[in-house]
Length: 422
Image (cartoon, rainbow, N blue to C red; front, side):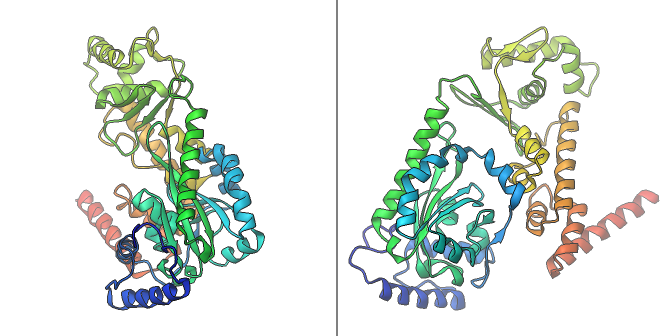
């Protein structure tokens, strides 16, 4: 095969290839070896799926439903290019009895549209809006594997890791934010064996590039509106995206910009001092020096004084989590939460905000009662010792692993209380 990313070369017999792939799939699931002629991209995906403990007899789960789904996708960046997707792919999908699917960066399907009969068949394997098709959860599939390797992918029939999906063929391509390069999600075409053609892979890639071009037109690089984006979750030094590029801020500048983004009306020097420094002996001169350095970095037109304030809107990832929590989109809030807010910061204003955000999200997850979302939390670096969430998960998912970890944490808590008492 000349192109390893194409599932079926022209002239190949689909029936014979399916037979060979099914035999190879059984060999891998039983012996762990991948025989030829399985493509390298598929073989590597199968191995990742096995390492993630994906069962070949498993199924996709639904993360988002009803109002939760509606609120989340209404504000998703790809909502703005759905008319384009429908224009380019909608007729092709309907006429060919295929489906158009669009996912977010976590491989949650946000839209699944197309031929009604095909949609009903797809619903039997949970290929529906709100379902999560990440490779780490359901194994090899076009949108999930496209996200895993960050490039367009075709998956043909028995190349799918989960057996119940093997009657399907799909092609998917990631869609990136044209300003930051961040993956926003994927565009996917799903249907029958006829999609195992080089043209379908090229087509879905072209649609993804068209969407990126459309997003660039909607948010031109030179525009000032919404041109500053601050990423402060899960990192000690925030990343600021500006019209001129990306800036990695120092820890102190990260704290200052975060606090000012939370106070568009501005903050006095005394307010900033109290929010930034635990040590009350720090003088206003120290703060003014930090602000002068930050002003040189951002430009004098961005940071004003008396009071200190930002003259351009700064969209922070903290606000994204808060908005989704406020809308009741718990799964969306959890997906946007990439870790504690500036975890190394000891600034009083930052620690208060960090604790409030974490406590609010934890409470929402426990109340929402979705075992997959709870499992995602406790298997993260920040949630692995979270006894509250482990208890909530244990009430819903009584596996040996969950029970063992909960017992271990409760034992550690009891020992700590005993040491404190003595």
